[in-house]
Image (tube, rainbow, N blue to C red):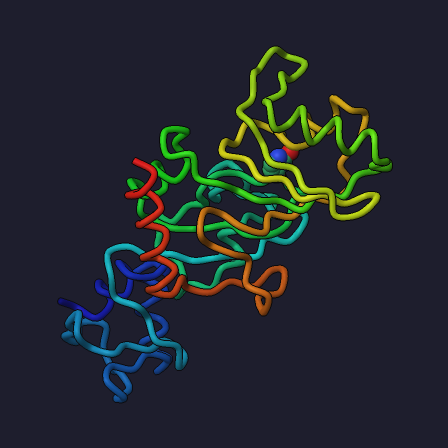
Length: 243
Ligand code: URA
């Protein structure tokens, strides 16, 4: 296969960008600087752009620690606001990569970005009830009575103001203003609306886990990395086991 094609297929760069990178001597095949875009390259080759190895595979899985102010959307239609795809390095995404589910603009934490539509669909489908855990900071206080009442109500499934009946959610109070909540569904502004039922505005929201994936402690906000093979295996097992 041509080098420019294999790289354009396996990164978010356009074929034109790749050609420029090759001509600027930024691309290596098996340790040798590539000279021309039409050089031959195979899937078994180690290809680097600016010293970074490009994974050559059909699907790519990237874990992002989403910062505030960034949209969990693809670029289409959002030319003036940064999306998670803008903050992911080219070698961790492909042209058809997209975020698996949505976090609000000011929610931080774990977001998976992949081009595997089938797996993404299953991870989000209510049929597979994949658990998502968040740390919530509220503008208000969980006194003992309120804490018990909310925990019990969430456990039994609350109904939102618009009549949406929610599935049971697990709540763990962490301090006067902080709690951990685990959901198996993802309705629009779900957590904000759940706490809104108890007049507790959500000040901060961070997703700390998604199925078996945990927000890595060493992944600062705005950073991303590829999923490890072990993490991917666990993700696939979750779908198998929840069938
Ligand atoms: N619930 C919310 O209210 N916001 C999020 O970003 C995720 C869950």
